[in-house]
Length: 545
Image (cartoon, rainbow, N blue to C red; front, top):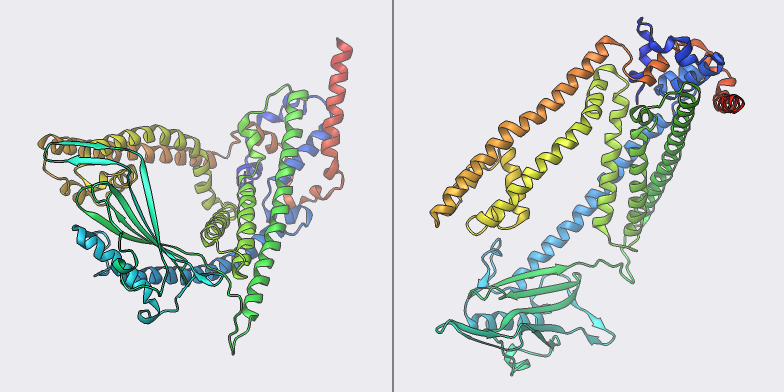
């Protein structure tokens, strides 16, 4: 709730219904009622109005501006550092593909596979040979991992069905579904080829599911090369994956450099943590004050005026912007702590830290919209989004059911014939792109014309989806937003209070610079007067009974 919604209504000349003596003065203690109005009205003022009303400086506003600046600087600094780590991982992965994958060409992993038994043995032999001569062939700083005085061996594991006989000519087979794994170890620098180090090694191609070669190197932690034969299609796909683990060196020294930059970065992160803790405390206090005002207003309407406060009026006291800032501060504090630990090489959780800092910064910048709402021309956008949000959520739930039905249907029917419908994830991405008008022609064109029935179904499927979502559902979605915008605009032009809370506050004509808000009695009378009046009301009911 912003002041433009509640505070500016005093400019209207229409006498509000709450001006009636029996309805909002409730025939008792009009001074206390006015005290309650001023307290609530002051709560909904913007920082400038609060400064004119009580001379209170807008510390939260100043703090948020400072916080936006320093958090953005922190995020940019972390992003540049993280970019170096990502580059390091990608280039290391590319290096190992060229070192350990035989005849590898850049960009060829999608089609990199072997088709003959001798090629499989040749690729495994090539990996072991390259691993044994790593010191002599690599231009990077790579070293074998040691466990004490012994090198960590290379692990060669074959995963296959325990028993099985397959006769394609007779169209018969017998398979024992139990999977067995055999692993062999190869130590570096003590061998020449696969046959020399493992002379009895044999691959069971008819029953084989996969062959995995795993080894550990310093500078990059874990390398896994997989020969995937799970489909038993005659094509064994080869892939290389790496698992990165970054650790602090036990002893390091760089001549001509100092750790001053690291210390300054840690101090800057500590400053951000202190700023976010302060912001968290101030916003939490404001939320608590709003809840207290809500309870007092609810007691007043229920016990003295015999009215039930609608939920929409109760929610006006809960400032969603403060809650957003509290969530942002929490994420930024946790992310900054992780960043300090990453900076000091205690942790290497770059992904978790990136999510926390990125989300926290996003919420901080979204919170800037709150201060834009103090201007009437910008405030109509915020009011439209807030008013249309419930209807939009209900509309999305209904449209989402239709969207999921198309996803499941496309996946099961078109999946075998179109690469964009192979998995539920790719189906959802493809349909979402179609809604936005992207990649429409290739989606139609790439449909394989192997089955006339499925091809005809795909046309009906795609044409109905595009027509339904683009021409109907999206148009209805825009209509919801437009109708809400027109309603809010008409309310602002009329200037008449639209809720019971606004009508209650519209009775107070005191301007922020009138001086009445500086009275000391307004700080505490409001709770006491409500409690006393409720007590008197209960005593009167008891005496009448």
